[in-house]
Length: 485
Ligand SMILES: Cc1cc2nc3c(=O)[nH]c(=O)nc-3n(C[C@H](O)[C@H](O)[C@H](O)COP(=O)(O)OP(=O)(O)OC[C@H]3O[C@@H](n4cnc5c(N)ncnc54)[C@H](O)[C@@H]3O)c2cc1C
Image 1 (cartoon, rainbow, N blue to C red):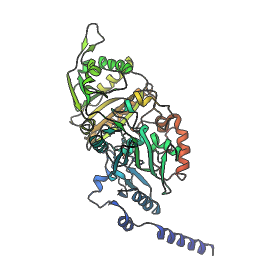
Image 2: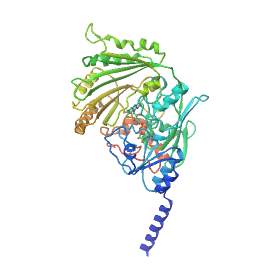
Image 3: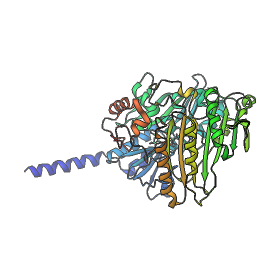
Image 4: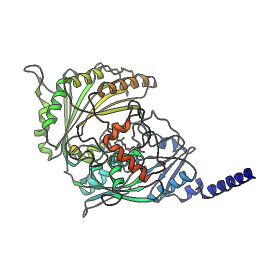
């Protein structure tokens, strides 16, 4: 009797479930956007992002064009007992936006954008790339907000994790300029988050937004006026001057005004005997004054008495910020490992270690294989907020050191992986915190501590409030276990 009753309940519940589930034909018919199935010719292109090391095969990829269609895609997933992952520009170093067997909600085609000169607010859907944002705001309205410095990185992921470019030393992080977000929650409601409404969610999404709180569909940013052109110098030096150059760059950074931004990089490509070293000096002010701020990099004292360091090459551009981003790095079809941390200082020992580590990087015959250190200056206005102003906690140390290997030859995967792991370990004691926009699952024992530090407990509370069943879950979502926990 009991068995019959149980069977009856099972059949009934299956019937109710299937009656309620949104079918694929229904999704396809109702959606404003595109449904890309595994058999579609677009599937391969849509499932790969920046890092080709991840070869994941989702169940289906949905590309909505509006918020209602994001809700519909979520309904399809939930009523068919599937999980989702969310992708905007696909630049995640660990490809969090595309997961095996899930429904990928790919918002990359959501590109509506507007600017209101009265409120001075830029409103954009999540899918715009930063070059598209600047093409609209700079070329049509002579305003901008801090965002990405490479053309293909997108509003969605970059802003939710922080977001820094040359405009940030004066205007702060992209996320610090957000005034409102529209979010689709796990219960399929659409909510607004700002300083008055859902304040805790607003706090969490600005810096912790990759953590699985919901799908952000719309961003409102504070706008700032831009100048027609900006001065930027790209300077290369001899490898033998590495230590003097980095020492000078660090000393210079200690007293430079917020209007100057620096990016220091050193790398070994394929089988080059020595690594290369270069610096970008950007001036956020009238172009003609750029040289008076960055000019000293043309000639400065070395460590040995009466020695002067001069560049191998120097190339100065005076260009609109839209042109600068349009011509930024746009990496294609490479596998990679990324590992970074904020350096607590750049002293002689750190400089020596960086040099040695680059000299020990693998030598390969492949032209596109590169091992690199990027030192991004994340000072000025980026540090000018309390550590709990929003979920972005890294407000103490300005130098963000990001180690990166990118390669095409598969046999170099293991030597590169080992090298970057060893590098990460070497700099652990000189570092504090990891920028969540360069996520790392190869080296971090405790990603929650590294990305969010003392803000993590509050993020867990917000997560439990807005996604109580932990529907938006993946390897590094808030509440997922770290290796050491
Ligand atoms: C070539 C390159 C250049 C870069 N340049 C910069 C730079 O100048 N400044 C800087 O600060 N960082 C930069 N980064 C790092 C960049 O900020 C991160 O990779 C960022 O997360 C990418 O965002 P995305 O939307 O392109 O990527 P995605 O892979 O689509 O998203 C990254 C993460 O955000 C989540 N996510 C994306 N969209 C949404 C959404 N709408 N709602 C909820 N969650 C979402 C995803 O699930 C994923 O976990 C760069 C990275 C690369 C590879």
